[in-house]
Image (tube, rainbow, N blue to C red):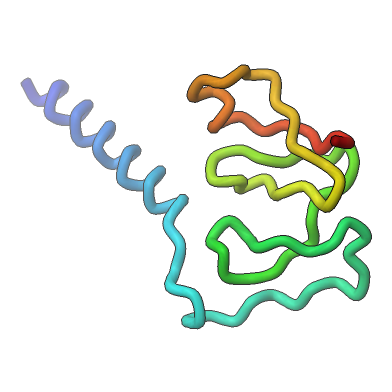
Length: 98
């Protein structure tokens, strides 16, 4: 009985921590990091849609849950291997020419 309670508590803790990792603070309540002097592929909004960040370039890793690995620049799209199911939403891909 104690082992079952401990297991359930551990699972709930893991779920809580993983959802916290994907939460965004309200825009305007923090300072955005400065952009580099040059973003060769342009700029895009970060996963929280608050700050501008450099877009990913050709063959760079992109996508992932909530686009946490970044978004591709102009003329590129994030190509994933997972097809059209939930794996496509979760997995990262690579920026390829359109």
